[in-house]
Length: 134
Image 1 (cartoon, one colour):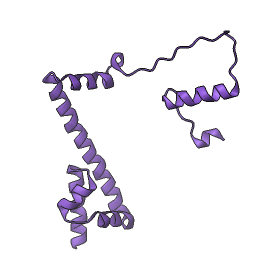
Image 2 (cartoon, rainbow, N blue to C red; image 1 turned 180 degrees about the vertical axis):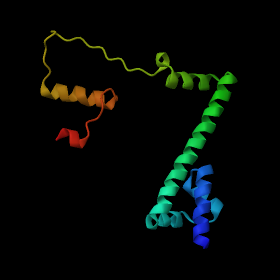
Image 3 (spheres, one colour; image 1 turned 60 degrees about the horizontal axis):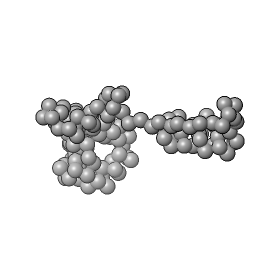
């Protein structure tokens, strides 16, 4: 059946090019058709999601390979990027310094809420999930 063949072709294409629009164009089907198939066929949806993940991992490998080549070519931007993301001494840091009037000064509930919100926004403390609040 032509539909089954096209489904298999799009799965194979997504593994090479994990971009739905581009993969659909290469196979000759519309994006709407792809998403309709995903909605109507759970097996296809699972295979498509797995193919997209596999394709993304392939692109990641290629990108890392290119990054390593750029580092070998003494590309300063690539070197900085690598160090910022792989070496703790070069990671972006947020430093907060403050002095309290007294060591035992207690924050008001409003001040505590503002400090907590600021720390969450700076990703210094995890955001509390809704189920953990109850």
